[in-house]
Amino acid sequence: AQSVSQHNHHVILSEAASLELGCNYSYGGTVNLFWYVQYPGQHLQLLLKYFSGDPLVKGIKGFEAEFIKSKFSFNLRKPSVQWSDTAEYFCAVYSNSGYALNFGKGTSLLVTP
Amino acid sequence: DTAVSQTPKYLVTQMGNDKSIKCEQNLGHDTMYWYKQDSKKFLKIMFSYNNKELIINETVPNRFSPKSPDKAHLNLHINSLELGDSAVYFCASSQDRGQGRSEAFFGQGTRLTVV
Image (cartoon, rainbow over all chains, first blue to last red; front, side, top):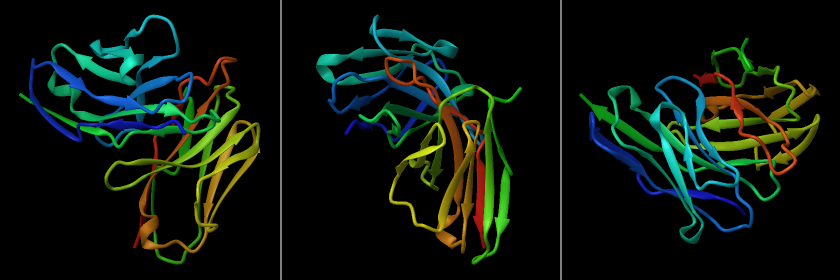
């Protein structure tokens, strides 16, 4: 079954530092991959998605992710984080049936001024 | 215009009570979901409905009963509430793209507290 694992559970960065959050997916054929963000007390919002094509995907708020098939990875990056990026970040992949979006355990990011 | 809306946003109730959470999507999507987010922020799928038909029921106690009167609505009824049911419940929807599913759109969440 398609699943994802996120390596970093808690990350603390200073403003302007670069960010990379790891996400690995289990092999299961074609994958559609997503990164979601959840700001404190809010619902999940889509940051970016990969369906096919260019493996470097650009999302909102300056985030990007690179799909590396050989490494089964879809890491999230941002060159310079801001205090407002403090949030929970989730990587997700659809199950083989396509009817369940499976989430990683999330990474809590704290950006300090 | 909110794409996926769920009510109520907060629900505080006593153990043993029965409660319902309602969800509606105006995106024309064919699939709706209920997720439970625990205190550690872990998101676990509970149910998935496609065109009003139950597709996924992820080992959820049968005290939880989803109902989908039409494609745009998916409600969740919970009987005999227990302390362990305290969590945030999210409704979501997505659409078949023909080559896999679209991203899922999430509601604002319902924070359920059982006392």
